Image 1 (cartoon, rainbow, N blue to C red):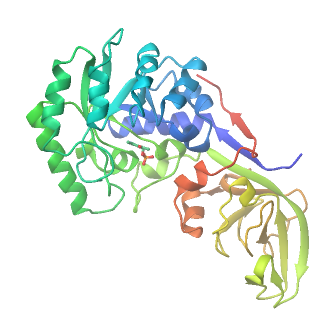
Image 2 (image 1 turned 135 degrees about the vertical axis):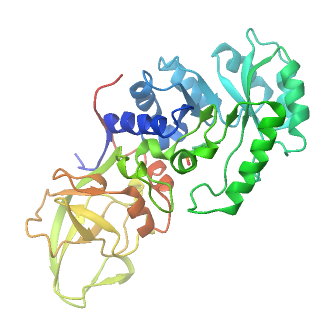
Image 3 (image 1 turned 30 degrees about the vertical axis):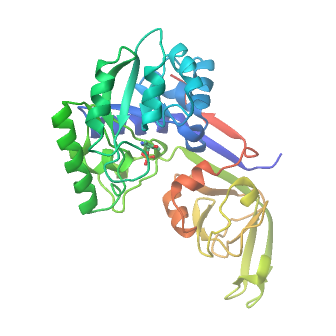
Length: 366
Ligand SMILES: *Cc1c(COP(=O)(O)O)cnc(C)c1O
């Protein structure tokens, strides 16, 4: 068997969810598990969180139905609502909650007769300029829905463009818009993503929507005491499958991008972009070999990558290689740091782990 496995620590997931709740003691926290729980396996993660989580959030009806079929009875919010009116029957049947971001969704809901009123989160575009009603049109939508028998438990929902920045005028501008709307409509709010949950108590509402922090990644530009206690959930672990010594000046890998600055020991690791390890990883991107940090050396191949292990005395065939997460000796390599080496963000690395990488779950369910 190929040694590459994504180990998922469900105790760490629960720890991080509880941390999100502790950061915002007056809010409920909907655990965002869209995109297969950011690559961690939505159903397994939902089962692990079901006893704690007040609700789950997903991107589509399909994602919600997979959870319901798996026996998840906790409320599930559709963050983008329905994609066409036909989906309302299933929203009703499976007791889903839904966002509405566009007039056509409101029209469709009001033309539908659910068995029970559907909890609705009205999305307002307070500055992200992606989804949502313009602030000056939201009162009319709110009014229509509050009088409609099809809708219940109305909340005002919005998303921040810059909550991860250490200081952002734009964040405060969005916040002012939302506070004014919330006051005018007397609406419970659902605003905070992970960075706002961690760093902006002013944004904590009736509900928050932490996502990436549940998986142990810190989305903030600068860290906080709470962010420092996040635990990595995924450990992408493999092994050394070959070792060779190269002379000073010799190239390694496609295009010869890396050249040995001295006589060097090169480890070949079973993990590549065909597994989702980012091909944009620069030379020097950190990797843990036997729990010791080593630099990536050479371009990532489809099934393999190469690491300079000249300074790892005990590196041998079969040695543990951690691409991100926790090593057996307790060393931790944050996926955020790896993401910087790839000029990307943890979100793309985690959601990018491909199906050919087996997931192995650790920690008790429920
Ligand atoms: C994905 C998503 C979130 C979670 O964002 P994180 O940055 O992962 O915490 C919150 N709200 C909406 C609308 C989303 O689409």
